[in-house]
Length: 442
Ligand SMILES: Nc1ncnc2c1ncn2[C@@H]1O[C@H](COP(=O)(O)OP(=O)(O)O)[C@@H](O)[C@H]1O
Ligand SMILES: O=P(O)(O)O[C@H]1O[C@H](CO)[C@@H](O[C@H]2O[C@H](CO)[C@@H](O)[C@H](O)[C@H]2O)[C@H](O)[C@H]1O
Image (cartoon, rainbow, N blue to C red; front, side, top):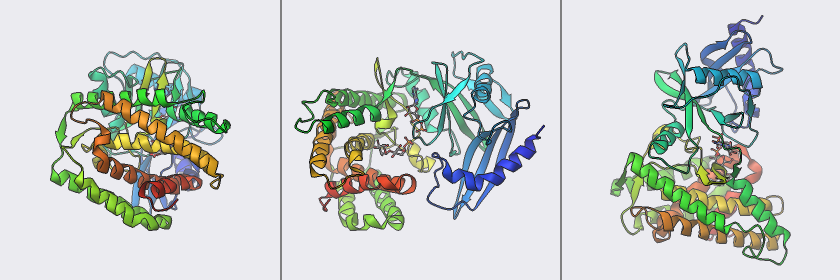
């Protein structure tokens, strides 16, 4: 029988080669220099199941990543094993503490024992496992020291009765480098849910299949959903404000945020030279954010809102994954920011959904025209739905043109970096948007 330490040593030795091949690994664009164990906890002896946190060294970066591993699999990764993941859920159901690792349910929640887990297979930054038709356990991969905003914000939203989130059911947390850190989050699973990305891209495909029809004429028109989605996002913002408060941004806040946009651009320019030609126009747009009319409200926001983060259920739209941008430092993700950043994130996503079909055929002008038409129609519907339901302090995004434009471009710069690191073949999607928005050629 393998001893836990033997397993940990074997796994750690293999990780340098194994990690870069994982979808959720955030450092695929840089070589892995070293992997060291930070903490390991035996969750079960028979079958052997070990919770392992490692520190991954890549040039000047040190990032903690989380795994659960076992010796009884062909590889070692246990999140794909129905019985082993069931052991994690059982521990949450019983409220166990194992060597400082705390498995808990949320107040008033009962979780059944004995369920088996199945991992979901969509493109994602973390690993999620579904149990029966009732709960989903998100296992954070790249760990953020401290409490994860995904759990903190959804708890706060649940407490004020927000109707547009899945109920938080439990968590796994423990100490990492002296800080209480969230390792996992259990949430209500919506078995009937379809994510917004799947719905939107289906609608785009319907349109492309109809040579002569416009977006409002085809069966799969998405504008009604886009408008309802705008209203749901506005209500989530209002609930976040109710739960955790808001402030009016002062001149320093605005200045800091303009400087941060420039700093992000500087950083991304260092690794993606294709962005260089748009830099002057981007900088001008960031500077113009200072000229936005009226007071700007800042509050806790989602921070990485896009069509893959919203689920359509029979009861309406739900927003998930309040973790913020997976690459950003925690201080930035938990800072009070303008909700218009989320609006901008979603507007970017409509543009993505429309243009992803052009990835393999950039020269097709007819397709490009239809894509633009779809994007404009759905962006307008979303913004209108948002404006109709938004709280007075946030107001109508259309009246905040310079700020919204700067946020959209800042998000597109983030996406350039994200695609460069994760899906280089998609790099043209944010780059061509930047060209369109800044008017710097397509
Ligand atoms: N509560 C839920 N009910 C149904 N499906 C969900 C739920 N939460 C997440 N999902 C599915 O899992 C996917 C990944 O979830 P997400 O929270 O975005 O993880 P990640 O942080 O890895 O991106 C979603 O796109 C969605 O398809
Ligand atoms: O893994 P997360 O969902 O937290 O977010 C990261 O990955 C997203 C891609 O899966 C990425 O989103 C970009 O691509 C989406 C289509 O796949 C598109 O809907 C988004 O608008 C676009 O930003 C996201 O930026 C990244 O943080």
